[in-house]
Image (cartoon, rainbow, N blue to C red; front, side, top):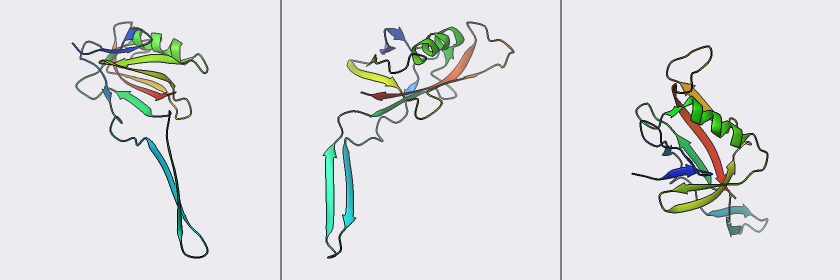
Length: 131
């Protein structure tokens, strides 16, 4: 069984784990290029040490989460500047919620109700970044 935890809380729901949607779309290098008056190009570059976005998201068929689990994650997301341990399989990442890209945490119920029950299922998006 796969491992996916945030601060020790398993993110694997009844339909499996949400997917790491942007896993392969990040580059560990920052680079800029600018043309100077003589026509030459000046390129500056540096390795990125942190800030890799990690977006965990359900799709229509998998990765659904209960309302009760989402409420637990809301409590974590409500702590400003908190750093948590994200475990994906055998890799561990220090992460924080990406509040600069709202919403950092979103849950969309499969069945809409005035007040969700703890076992109601929904699709989730969790926006994190490495620190």
